[in-house]
Length: 424
Image 1 (cartoon, helix red, strand yellow):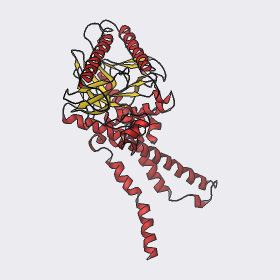
Image 2: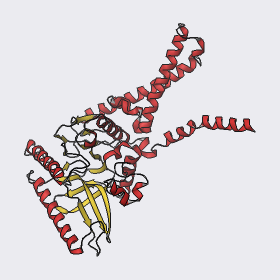
Image 3: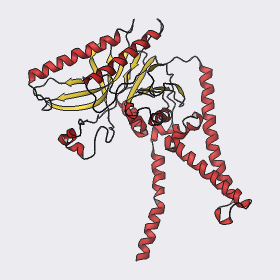
Image 4: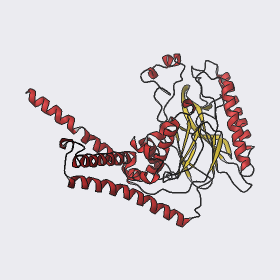
């Protein structure tokens, strides 16, 4: 959308808290249309253009210009006033210290187990470097790894231990039980290696991993974000991605036929049904999204609305993503721009942990406090401050844009009506 072009100038984005990214796009288009109107009028006045090139009168043009400039001015004043209020409240107690880890894990379709292990080791080493860089009094509340990076070639197995083995495994029940115990052991070893980097109170972990969910002998595979409490490392909770990427995680029609999907070298992913929110030791509530879910405003908003139904509303939005597929292209910048708008629309800080970049700490005004460059290994120590201001968009979503979209069909309806009546 046109709104993404404005993310370098946060003052221009504040209307998004009331009317979403569609509202910012509308503002940009209307400003362009008013500018075009005035260029036409001036061109006709000075005879650069023939008279038929312009329509309307000066009064109408003045009204148009006044309306759009008033909206832009209100957005800038709103932004300035909030920044002044923030400055007057400093120092503001942060919601916690969160480490966002970024590395360059190999992302290839034909990668093998050793590639996944190498990627996992890079993230473990980068986490260790991040932990050592902090002072002895700097407590870490949460460590975040991007989507799919915690697997290390071995997905998490969520098994209800009921009789029966999914046919996909092609093994006996005793062999499946052995597999389950080995996965649990591997999970604990990986956690021990991460926690060994920290002294004192251990941090919570939010890490990306595949989850194989087995219920009554039936298998479902999810792209998930694991939530790991250091005091109960085996009681893993997880958020299963609800909005899958077309052609990346499913193929329309073909996904109805698992065997045909397997012929393309793809596994059958299931879609998660619920949102999730979790509490940090500081008391702050975090809500995760995975991959391109934060590109779709209505998806982020729906996660927040759903999370309110089973607990406190989130204070922090966290997106974990594996953008290694794009190899440092401009899609990474576009993904970051979407994260900026999601932060403004929902008036909550957005933290992004991205494999291969761009990881970022964004506040509730859409300002990027810190970001890592694409293809750069590193970490961000984020200390987001609370926001949570009310906005019309949080309450009603995209309904203004939907109503305007209906008006866009009016010329088509008029044309069809005339054509139908003419034939009669």
